[in-house]
Length: 341
Image (cartoon, rainbow, N blue to C red; front, top):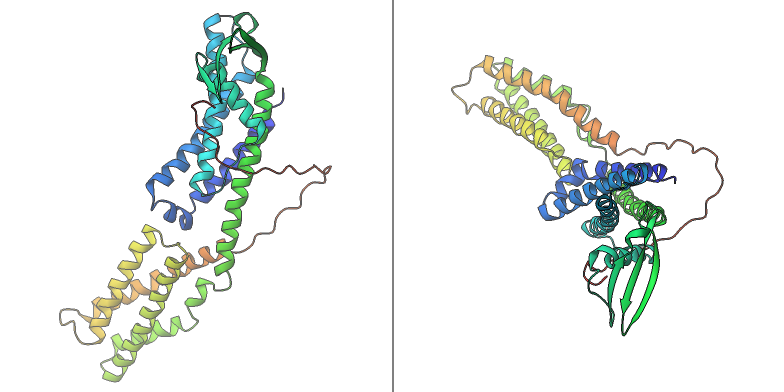
């Protein structure tokens, strides 16, 4: 039974979703609602954890001990059930509609009949009492006897390996839809800002501004100081635009915000000096502040460039030639809860 390839694909999709939520511009927004954030993280972990359980069931020899046979069978069915809920709750947290198809609903109903509510399962207007046939238990599945009505019963074969194959197929399809929606949201966000690079805020005359600020510090001339003050206020205005651009894009992380606050503090201190409002500051202090502003400016330009680079469309590698695969359409919607399903 080949499941490892599908499991690898699901894990690749999990990584794609994790990359999205750990990108600051989206993480900052998601963290505003801790319940939503925790639901996303719990759902991702649960899907990943159940993949381990499913993979172990497939690759491990089925036990001979009767008790362990039940543990294996119960555990697998519960893992399938948890995995379905996790995908539904992941889609819900991102506000995507989720609909389970008939194959997933059938797996869910078999789990409920076998281990969820076997002693008294209300399904519609019918009440079932279910029994796993112990002597038929194997890695491939078991027979389930179902009694209902007046002396009526039915027997059904539960094919666990087929259920695994079906579930992984549709979990992968559902995960792909979630990942595709997130990629589209990312594309739209980048499209909104890609024509306005943050680097453009730092105009080519910034070096001239710093030079004239220095001239205002070194000169005793009032006019030079006034001109230096004007250039410093121009730098301050530029950095206010830089901060606003980062905020608008949700790219202002805590570290950059802290460094910007220090930068604005240095600008304020130097502004007071050039305006003659800082009697306690000496010229050497002003030169140190200017040296700090020049040095840190280069780092902020680098941050702007890194943000701009992340908004550029990267060329996708050409896919290997392969046979065409028939597309499978899936709609995601809410699945009924545990009771009676």
